[in-house]
Length: 332
Image 1: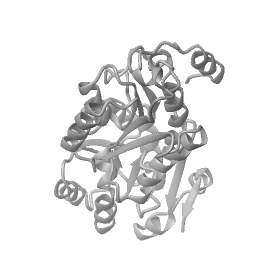
Image 2: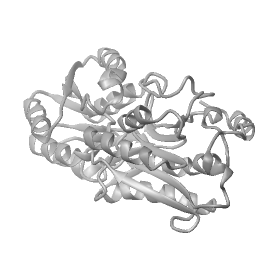
Image 3: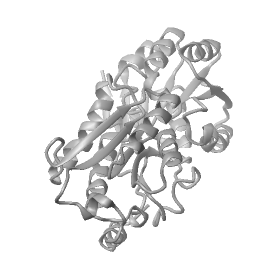
């Protein structure tokens, strides 16, 4: 965890000489900010996250169409679209790019090692090769992580609390979009499963049909599911919610904060609205000449536990009072 005082010191000492052509021409042209969103632009929740960023920038003096031009692309969970849009945005030579999720950041890193990139919703930036270290990233990339691997133990504990009869638990993810192809969470997941006396199941999926098949296979097996935090699962969480309901399988949305609000059983993870809002000052600092190599990668400030009592009742589950008392939001 980066201490506030250390963060302020590092930010204050950011190199003023970052070689941006735009910096030299600050009064001569409108600044440009690229944004590559991994999600679906028709999802009100993810549109809200983008609004948190743009509002934060406006509060710092960067108003879209006036003092800055925002160029936004939406990949809708498709790795191919991420790569296409990454190339397109880099070719337009913006002053800074905001990258949401690990595969989007990887796609942009392949295209540029000079344009500053501020990532959000990335789990393991060191392991992914985006930064040399969290306090001093050391290159053209910095940003905000959303989860650490050890969090998987929390997800399993909560699932067992609300569904104590569960004996097998699958962790579902898309290997094309999950951190480390899914490997980032698998070791801690298996260790947590052993400690809770449940059988761990690895369930990689790449389509709605595969999601449906995995969930159907768990029906009537005293099994539950942890839905891993990756952009594909975020885009396809509606399928997960509907199919788990039909098959009576309890599931926790790991770091998918809209999961329980939209009908899933429960979700626990970082507040993505807050992460996008916190990215705005980093974009502002880079536009004013700061070097991303000196801006420390930051961890989440806010986490949310959301429980859907209606879904719990439909699954025949009773939410323990202690778990209910820890919830930030309860859907009735």
